Length: 425
Image (cartoon, rainbow, N blue to C red; front, side):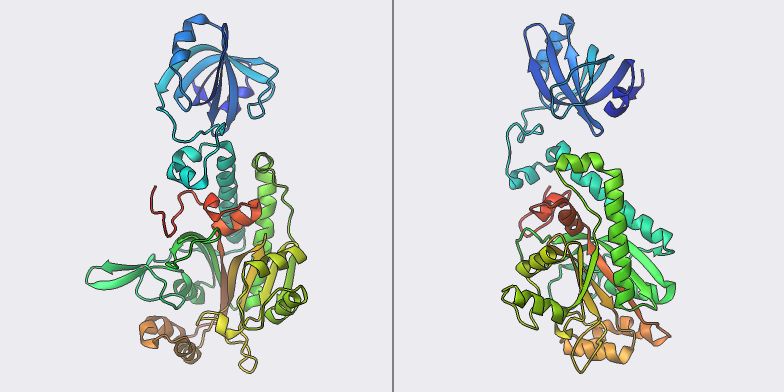
């Protein structure tokens, strides 16, 4: 008999075969119960035939088994098993017996985050943890879906680079044959070169940041959702960001109701609020936040703005000093740039802006940032051959997941996190 998923089996009547992991065991004198779990759900199984009692006594939590049986209507007291159905076992095969578990998947005993991450392959068997990554899958797919429909071209950029994409020295160096190279901290320079020829591009990819931080908001390897658009200023690309986040949230609400309920999240479609950096500083000062013009926004400031303006908060017209060398110097008198940040759920999820497309200005900005234009000759030269104005942005996938699901730590939103202390599993 063909093996069905638990979700499929629960809809059937009569005999079925299912496979999965043992989530819970309950041993009574003349009847045995087990909960069987796969990625689609958990079903209660009952063993009444005494010839299977010796096999039942060998079972351990997370052992992989195959059971055959009859689907019956039943009153299920479990909070997590599928309501209204029970499988009466007529055959049981142990496929792979589990040893003693280092952490409990059924969460009868709670473990700390560090220990959970040490045993991540077990941790992601938990229904609540699976819910996070099912939702993250919807986020990534909805991002792709939106920009395909908008006529964008998906591209892939290098993960090995010869010089800093965004300035600074926080890069992971590597030996590339006889040369020194780095893991890419951003696809920035390459997606710009694609956009000035292909016009509208998007990509999803991992990047690496070597900052020596250890916070609940930072990882050293992250996944980014990026776009770059020709003939666009920062307001054009901010609108794209507003629209795609709204689309993503709508799709998660539509596709992941079960997972949102399991996580206790009531997700609402966000509205957008636009303000200048100067306005944001004045608002924060009015609400007794210690900040002055020229300061970057810290955690307290981001949380306060998101409390005041529910939804996505766009902050544009940033000081040139706070933005990377490739951001357009919008007003040299006021020293403001075409850069922006976007806040959502109390944290920054995105930064972007209009880029520099004129070689002379680009060289000048590189020098201002104490970078050598000779290191970026290939990049600068690309704008000498009819480059249009262009803009774009990058959303952190883990940051967006964290914000949407109100997670306490960004590591919860990463399948196998990489931070200053962790490089395995």
